[in-house]
Amino acid sequence: FQGGMHIANAELSLQDSDGLWRWRMSTRSRGIYSFFISSSPYSETSFTQTDNDIQLQRILVTDAADKKKNESANFDWNKGTIAVLRRGKQKQLALDANVYDYHSIHLLTAAMQLREQKNTTVDFYVKGQLVKSRITHSGRGAVNINGESIDAVIFEQVMVRSNSKIKYYYDAENPLLPLRIEKLESGESPSILSLQKVTWDL
Image (tube, rainbow, N blue to C red; front, side, top):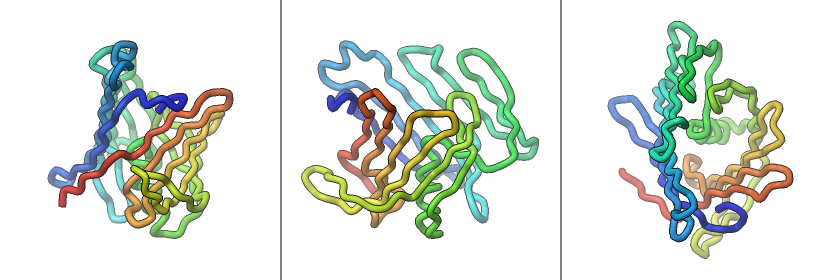
């Protein structure tokens, strides 16, 4: 939702393939908005599990309607580097701590719930850069999903030198299930992802 209008639908999935996990999200505009919004962004984050955490392996961002938006980040944990390709330009970033992004943050908040951890600061990958990001467990609340009120655990994310805040609402019974994600920026209408349905592949 943007400015209260339901402009697009997104599909988010988490799958395992021989120990390599992938978060994937594809988004398409809906209804009359498809005449005005041509973008169809796709993003993918792959990672492996370690004894205590996860290690990102690759981040991919594409848009079938705009090839200039294609972006990739390949993680080399042995060399301690990230090879980034963004808008046709290549660069390397130093890798000295665990990194999270907009997909893998769901694993971080789930781990924080298990550890009863109230806040943490992590390196966060966004738009070809690593920035410090603070994640805070801010309490509980209720989220309305298809007319049903669901108990939610709430986390807030703030990045260094950013005036925006992101709020994540997770199902209290399923810590990996985001019910609602709100991006809040001063002076602008919030952008909201709200759960419509979920399919468990067990």
